[in-house]
Amino acid sequence: MASTTVNVVRYTALLGGVFYGIAHRRTLQKAHDAEVKQHAIHEREHLIAEAKEAWKKKQEGPKDGVITNPEDPRFDLEKLIAKWEADSK
Image 1 (spheres, rainbow, N blue to C red):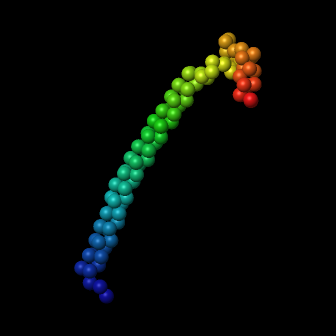
Image 2: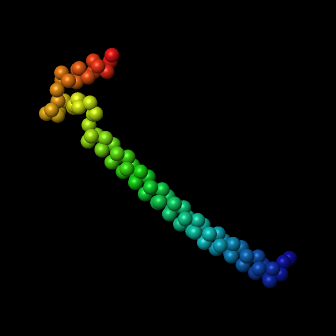
Image 3: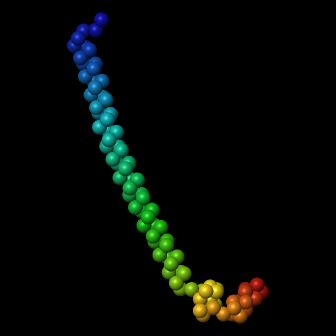
C-alpha cells in the first residue's frame, strides 16, 4: 500500500494538472475568440467594400447611355429596343 506522502504527491500533481488545464484552455479560448472577432470584422469590411463598389457601378449607369429602368423619367423604349437589336447582331 502506498504511503500517505506518495498519495499527497499524486493528488497534488493531479489537482495541479487539472488547474493548469483549466488555465491553459482559458488562454486558448481567449485567443480563438479574438481571432473569430477579427475575422468577422474583416469579413464585414470586405462586404462593405464590395457593396460600395457595386453601388458605384450602379450609379455610373450603362456606358452606352441607354436607360433600362422603365421607372426612370428619362427611359426611352425605342432606344432600348434599338440597343437590343444591335446587341443581337
